[in-house]
Image (cartoon, rainbow, N blue to C red; front, side):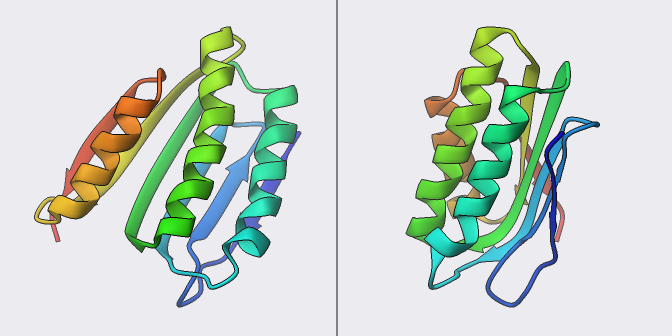
Length: 127
């Protein structure tokens, strides 16, 4: 079962993938200069998870800020999970947590929601 834990840095988010529990959490800031180097192992771990998923998969994204290369990799990862949901192999649902006063992050969550078939809940957070 795929498992991954990356602690946050000033430029990268904390990432936790627990394949047994069916949990993917990404939280923090993502402005890594080498997005490919950072996100490729996460993408690969999610692909391994998708090969043998839990019956329910919960995705929680809480990013304070992210750059455009992060946005692309997040979408690639979310598409793997979305295909898992559409196939019926796992009930996948995502929460997009954002500061209630940050319209840019709220809009980013709405954009992902529009691109995915899995349920996406926007969750405003008080600062």
